Amino acid sequence: MNAIAEQTYNRIDNHLYNTQGDSWWQENAVLYFLKTGLNPCRFPYFLNAYTQQLKMSAVGKTALDIGCGGGILAEEFAAAGFKVTGIDPSEASLETAKNHANYSGLDIEYQTGTGENLSFPDNSFDVVYCCDVLEHVRDLPKCMSEIARVLKPGGVFFYDTINRTFQSKLIAIKIMQEWQWTAFMPPNLHVYDMFIKPKELDALMKSNGLQPKDVKGMSPGVNPFEIISLCRQRIKGEITYGEMGRRIRFKESNDLSMSYMGFAIKNSIN
Image (cartoon, rainbow, N blue to C red; front, side):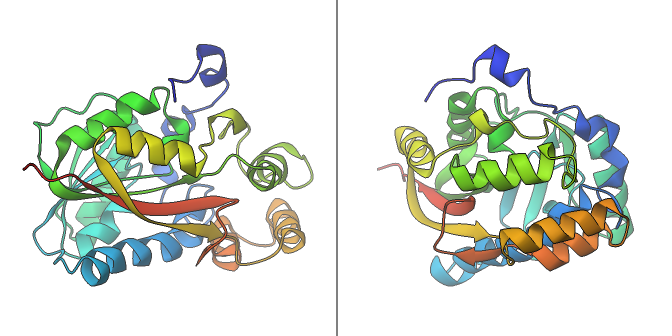
């Protein structure tokens, strides 16, 4: 898998996180949908994988959040006991993350950075996670190489991303972004050609010494017709973004056709 072509990458609007950097924690802001709709699915999966499947303690373990945004996932990891460092290219989002961590009484280190150029020594972190990000990255092979580099041998990489399928195009692109009568996400938040098939991500992880251990689907908790109905209610102002996320509420499944999440372990040094 190669870096995304410039003409394709230029179609995605990653500047959204600068213009809406202060709205990650606001009930009626679009980015809050990620907290109420996705976090209840993915974070319990990650924590269970780490503490139950892998039999590791989260307390005191170092974790790197790549593309931390306003800290909605960093705070979950920190509250579970991880010592979290979050990086993001958006200064506005980082300012929000810092302020909210202080408000929540959580000790999280935030700094400017991107997944393609991590400013950390080799073998720095017990855990690296990258969520809502891989489908936004220009040079995914470089990002994966950097993730593997800073992860300790035997460390765990957690991720989620969007599959490149008809279903994801229908829901994530058409219904959520493009169709005027249903769209509640900003235009060009996602570009279909940048979605990643599981076999592509598996190959990238393996080529960088990360051994995939598990993958699960992240499926909407309601059918497409109900999603359309909720989109209409949101457009009319009848429900907030937060409430919409709670009603759609993605769930763990064996269906990878929409979004998926998983983890891999870095090869140990012999």
